[in-house]
Every structure is written in C-alpha cells, then in structure tokens.
Length: 237
Image (cartoon, rainbow, N blue to C red; front, side, top):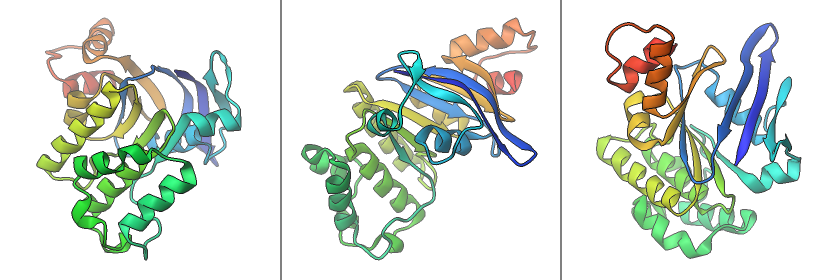
C-alpha cells in the first residue's frame, strides 16, 4: 500500500528515528511495537504529516507521496487527547463525519461495536480514559481514509474491552481497511496483528510475522526458546 523509506528525525542532538524503513500492505493489521521512548509516536506523527522528517519519505508506488495523497490515504488517531471537550460525543461524531466526509452508513454499527451508545449524550471531557479511547477509535473507524494510524488502541481498556475492540478492528480489517497500530502491550500485538515492526532506540530491529521474526532472531544467534513474541522481541532488541 505504501512504503516508509529511511525516515529520520532528531530533536536537537537526540536522534528519535534513524533510517526507519518498512512496508505496509493493503488490508493488513500491522503492529508497531517497542518500549516507551522507542520513537513510535514520533514515527506516527511524521507519517501523518504533523512533524517534518529530517530525512526519508512515505512512498506510494515508489515515489514520495504528495501532501494531498497523504491526507487521502491516512487518518491518524492519536493517544491521550480529548477533542471538543465541552461537546457531547454525539455532536463530536456528527461533526467529524461532516468535516472529514466520513462513513455515515457505518455510524450505528460502529457505535454498537464499541459500546458508545451510553456515552453519546456525555461531554468528551467527562469521559474516562477508556471511554475516551473508544470514542476516538469510533471517530477513526468512521473516517473515509483507507488506512488508519492508531496510537495505543488498547490504552485505558480492561481485558474484556480490549478483546471487544480487537474483534471490532479485525472486522474492519477483514473488509479491506488497513490498520497500523502502535502497541506497547506485546501480548495484545501478537494476538491481533498480521505482521509486526519492531522499533527500539529509533531503529527498526525486525519486520514480519511472529514466525518470520523468530527466524530472524535465530539467524542472529539468539539463544534459548523463541516460543513467544515477548522472547522474540527481547532477542531482537
């Protein structure tokens, strides 16, 4: 679908991203995993066009994407924000649908999938962290762009909510939506994602399915059993 090619970003003397490269395939659930401070949010903000890159590009068909192509391709759902805090959730959803030209035909379905019905009359600022996360995910899924960048989709959710949200995301991926998820809970990433990009210290340490990553770790001489994503991640990073 698109290629991330050599993206680098520095904050003064601090390198946040260093030559980050990988591919995103149409219709997949791709997980970006790494510890806090790995550069995951910085990468998403660069891909979304919120931060300028110092080097590298997002490429479509081998050429750098224009600003218009980027806007039409990607919708970014950031973590830990409360947009339009004084407004009710129903207003925020309708406003986002109108402003972004979203999928009105999916409004009722996504409201049910994410259990947003009881929240529609409540102000955004009055929602809990987990409720606000589900509200933002709903707005993202209603956006018209074919690919979503979602920063920490399960942050603030309990176990049952995490499984329900993961199931909803898989439904939309099965219909052809491309989902690129930044996740620090490695077990959650292993359950929902088709492929993974491992980011640590601003560098890509591996890319592929869990089996492919395990093979990469073994080829690099990793010792011990590589029977879980956690062990594979530790071996590669």
